[in-house]
Image (cartoon, rainbow, N blue to C red):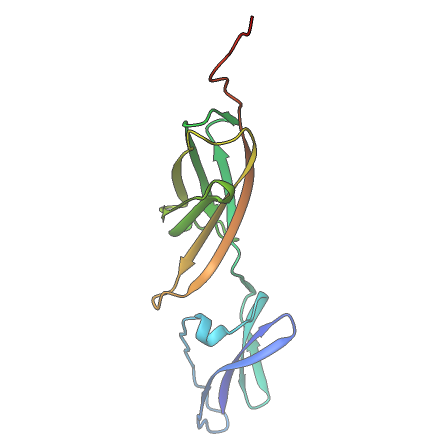
Length: 178
């Protein structure tokens, strides 16, 4: 049998197997092309390689990484805001290999019940939150989650980032008692 195995940090999984008949002294080239999707890879991650095996002969591929982490950068247009103002959130998302992400972004300021979903295109995203007029002064976490989906709609890669914004106190009324 000719087989190929995916080997990642000590775990081994057969990903292809074929019965091949090669006579003594004869040489045969084998080409295996596979999409390493979640169904085939399972939970394998880290530094990996493919090992092709026929009888007592084997050959290893170059090493590559399988991981689902997305590196997320997050910026806001200011640090401090007044109630009722717009918070502009933007950033970049890349994979370990530097490839720009094309997928989705979810942003939230949970304490204020604000959440948005948008797209990530060529690694860039942008979201705008309108702060409530009655937002209380204080520090609030802005959480961004970036993810990619496969053709079946399952999340295959994701990452998140958090930053803090401040909502200032606004004096709305001053009373003087005499």
